[in-house]
Length: 312
Ligand SMILES: C[S@@+](CC[C@H](N)C(=O)[O-])C[C@H]1O[C@@H](n2cnc3c(N)ncnc32)[C@H](O)[C@@H]1O
Image 1 (cartoon, rainbow, N blue to C red):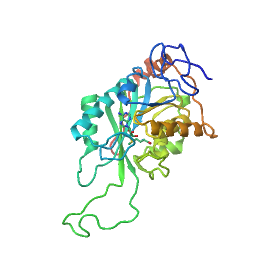
Image 2: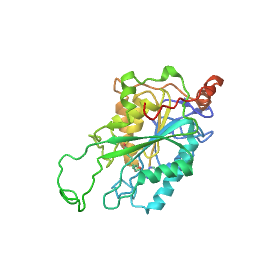
Image 3: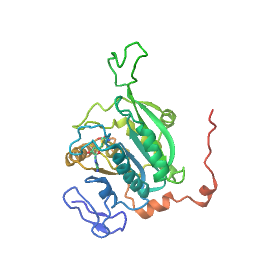
Image 4: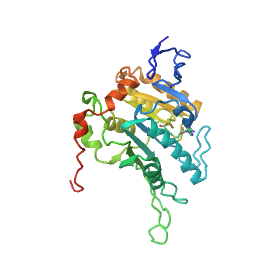
């Protein structure tokens, strides 16, 4: 049985069972590289301040999607204010310069609401994160086109959304400091991913979930926004795609989902991924080390971010 040292208080933590280290008995902090079944607002309280480099998630859609146990039909204002509490916790746990990538889908034609505007406003104005960009994830899910709304007539035609958004925010500084030797994105990837129109088909395997991320979407975000060894959090983790990609690319993960069933699937996927040749185990990390690495040196503080011209 594996034992390890708590990443906050550096005391030895014993596993609760063969493969589970839930929280440190000394300081109560949840340990890294875990799939945790629970309500994200409760679980996130046990993540230390300024410890996560990248939060990436897609919250419940509030469109009556048939999730395992969550009822996806809240009143709209209540839905937004519940999520705002989650985003406030997200801000607390992000390191200075840490990023938050939020995937949201356009709502239905019948009850159209500009949900991405509302979320962007809530996160910038009420939560206080800085909006950095909007990635258009083009899924092209319409295989057969027939008449939607009024066929070939301006009487009442409908636009069908075949895309989703990824809204990207940062906490405080635009820059995320880290060891440049741990930046592992290739030149080709950087050039491809920095064009914000991403054509990525939806996940081909659903693993029993109604709306899983495709691995490619998370791979691009993780490679673009994090260094190897960084910590990636998905607080609405579903069947574990963000955790899986983080661990396969040498990052640490924290996965939370309210459904035991989805968490069990995520654990199975992570276990299977450890057998794959591409799997990279990230080095041991501590909060002390994270704070040192994300605090800019005097020289770094003096160099201001270069802002590109609108037409470049
Ligand atoms: C859009 S899905 C995320 C799917 C995920 N991106 C994947 O790749 O599988 C939203 C998830 O939020 C979970 N959820 C709903 N309420 C929650 C809560 N209070 N805390 C944590 N997870 C919750 C649902 O069980 C569902 O799996």
